[in-house]
Image (cartoon, rainbow, N blue to C red; front, side, top):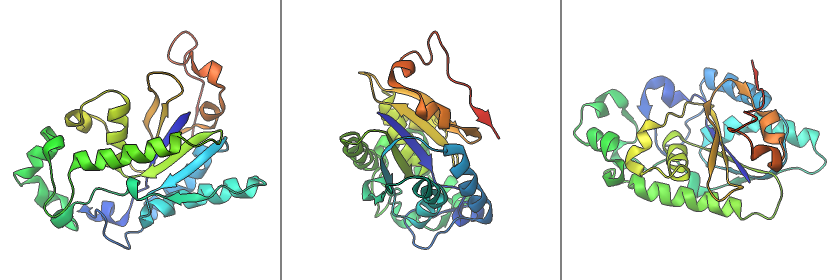
Length: 231
């Protein structure tokens, strides 16, 4: 099964340089609304098993334009599953603070260099976050429906999922960059998970998501990846 990982588009908190965490009523910025509309075009149409989304407003706003477009084009609608396992990290007392001020603190070095040991004050640990996120992934992978599993979540959550898929220790997950409205695609159809796409913010991925399993086996090998359209 293919897993499509989508980070929410640019938010009001991103624009203000604030670590919003799970604070309510954080909507997309004007830039983010445009990214969400563009995302609907970039994703296009492909077989879907499930759509699992973090319940936070910015994630739901990100996927809504695409979700409306696919349901309009299909006879059977695909429901959005709001999944608490995909929630943003509970940053506890860090929530709502300016990132500039957090950069100067001693704990920031732990976040960057030893994230597996980081527990946010009155929040959760990054290792706890990875565990719950992976549980959501495996729930989606167990779906009996055919098609790709679509995940809409947050930067650190997606980074932790990709790190696990690639056999990386959580302490190395900061080496992965996941931008707002980016698409990453993991292939779980073989014994070892393969990354077909990471942090793509420009390409149309419809062709890649519609390619057959047999043809995907050769991706990254003799046949190369299919051509993608850049807008």
